[in-house]
Image (tube, rainbow, N blue to C red; front, top):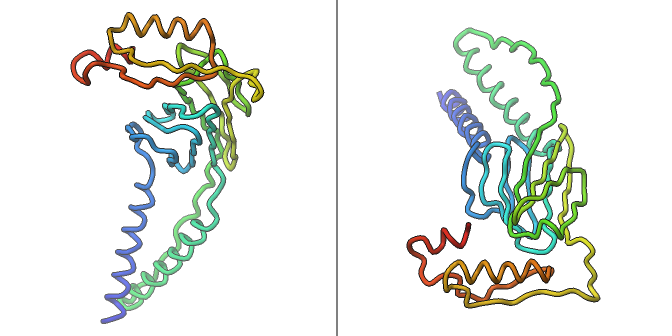
Length: 226
């Protein structure tokens, strides 16, 4: 009787563990709140010098937080996890076989599963808070430039790992310029004028000391984002 209860307990534990492993991925569409590492369909995506803002299936929005953000995509197999799952599978199979033997029955071997065809996956990243005209891409990916952001398209094959880096083009540590600004809260006209002058001078980066808006209510922040 004790062995029977133990077997049922092991089966229940395996069912809960399976549910956890299946749910330990980011949903098809979600706002992350600024993560640096996520798992999408078994693929680990890590962002350095940036944060992941939002995910919509294979489309991922990233905000750059440094001069050279990096995106690392890892689709290589997790040998340790696979070994653990195989060991638990064997334990559950033995437990079920024990229960069936008490009932005078035997466990039938499942039909062999057809191996899944290896296929590539496409990810499209939108990276904001970056100067699209002063950035170059290092790595195997496609780069398109937008307004205040860049778009990066990556094709990842099964078992593959890729690293994509965005860095300032023609950057020299010996000589570069940056801008410091502030008190841009007096309407969007003032802020647009500041942005215009920044674009004319083309600094490597800019720091805004605030205030950006008078209040956090109403259309203040909406106008600023636009």
